[in-house]
Image (cartoon, rainbow, N blue to C red; front, side):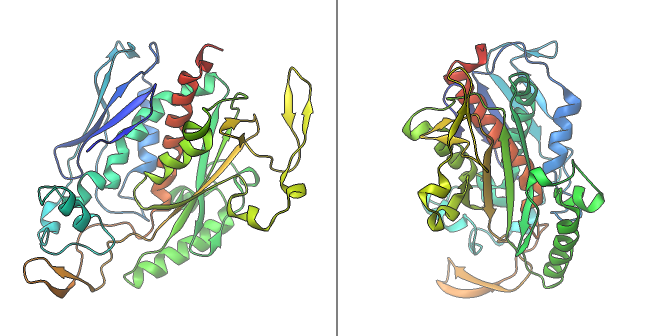
Length: 360
């Protein structure tokens, strides 16, 4: 089974949640990029477990660049990224494979691999696999910034609590609650914290949403049809574990709009066209318009909850009660902020290289 993202810039995932490591093979990385360890570890810290509103699994997530880097710079050759797993607790999964967890990949992965898959901690389907993606994206961020591209996200919703739009929020982070939840709206963050704590006390979990904006894209970035900017972003976002929906631009709100509301006029000049109006589309027909790209990703409630659920005993063919032990997130959005940003950075970098924009 292949776990690869990108065409010109290819990232192939390796390892598993409870194996010795998670990592990636990166091909097509531009030469001469500086490894800024402080910036990379800061990005890793945004997705780390162990926080107030996340799993208590504690990994230091030190990133090793085993090939393709000399004297702190990329060589243009393939890069092996290695992140050791040091706090896996596989005994929490002793009920597998006989009792597949509701909401998890256990059953379908067992059938696909004829019972050979490593299911501990979610195996290769675990959110742990996003760690190398965040590391590689953090390496690329300064390069994209040098081309005028800025990518930022925050926690947009928990349950029915909505934050203000990113462009109406303070800079990161207004207080400790905002930082813990990765939400830039301090009023909404306080309410979200109450909802998460109440859900945790109920021994349950809750759904969430991450909001993203991409600024500074050059006009015409993307490929027609299947590798257009919108489908490429949507595909990458839907690959994130537990993602259940993606909206781009006005999203599903377009079903209530008229063309006269949704269309935006072109202004500026023939040499420097500008899409005008309120919240214009950041992409049309798969190509960037130069306007900001707005994207929202909905995440399901975490499936592992400390309540009694029921599942099929694969040996007896009887339904039996199951309580999933272990250290699990009550909400996914806070740690997914870093992953949503990473996916956007990887997609944009790939399209920049494919389209020849990196030389402009």
